[in-house]
Image 1 (cartoon, rainbow, N blue to C red):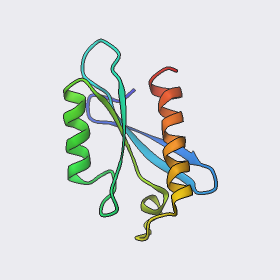
Image 2: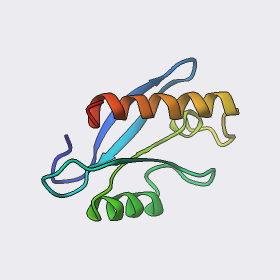
Image 3: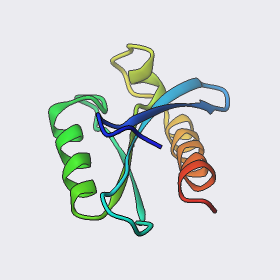
Image 4: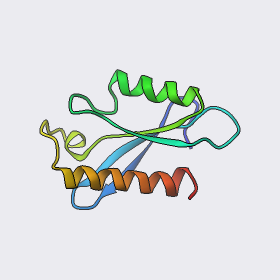
Length: 104
């Protein structure tokens, strides 16, 4: 789980597209919280001010949040991946959250 200094990061393998980085922002408090998975838009990655402020704000309100980069952002490309790669990435991140964080 993350330290009190900020979110923890995790590498997630995306079949056929390499690995991406996901950041977990757990909700404050003793009870388990639901997890929300957020992807960035075409203009900025998960480290943008908007994404980090949103994830931290949601976590402070009891919603654990995971952000991630799509492969094109992770590898420094400007053109978004095709839909099957984006879908595979989302699927891999959700599976990782369920396994590693949410305890399913």
